[in-house]
Length: 264
Ligand SMILES: C[S@@+](CC[C@H](N)C(=O)[O-])C[C@H]1O[C@@H](n2cnc3c(N)ncnc32)[C@H](O)[C@@H]1O
Image (cartoon, rainbow, N blue to C red):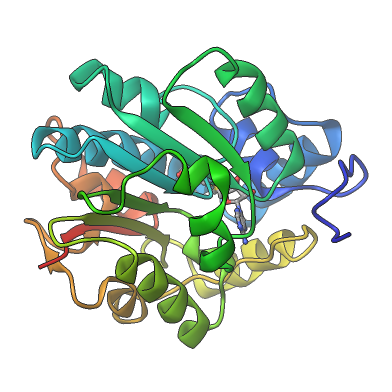
């Protein structure tokens, strides 16, 4: 049994802290305290979470517009506003979504909400084990990898701090996908934050079972290796196909890059 198997209300947790920043209710006192400590370390922590979630929504809408109807959502978190299946099904009611997360509370909450929803599954697994994820009944039994799939790696690869491991994990998911599949990546990165804020924010996350590592843009690029990036490429997340004008201050306060690539 790993430290992820039990619900630990004594130790803060990334999924539940993120849920708190997004205004969700799947979090405990220990998570709220850590999230506030995170905000103390980096005042833009909530801006990051919200900008990232908004990027996820725009990426899913784009992917639906190019005909994608199957999604593998790695590190899906707690269901909150703007869940992938809800957004995708506005465009295509038949869209299938396989959610994967390691966190017990997020998975239990997802299962409760999705119990009666056909074509959507929730798998509790470690995304660093692509074979386990890809062979899980909720993934292999739902998604048809002989047709294009979108792999969503949104705000998840910071939880794989080692560059070589992160690149290998992403490569394994790409290799499972056929030509015409897509990969969406977003990643926390130092834009407005100072070096001290980055260190302090990493220290707060080190108290959780899933520490994180920020990456510069050049360390994010290998996560998309072999993909042809759709315009505008790898950019601060608020600038990825925004729905309207974006304030320059919001661009840097998001402290994250995002991109969507297609497999040739
Ligand atoms: C910052 S949240 C992102 C949620 C969602 N992707 C989004 O962008 O709105 C990161 C999620 O990754 C999950 N996570 C962290 N490490 C993981 C791992 N090794 N395997 C699966 N999930 C993981 C956390 O539990 C958390 O729910």
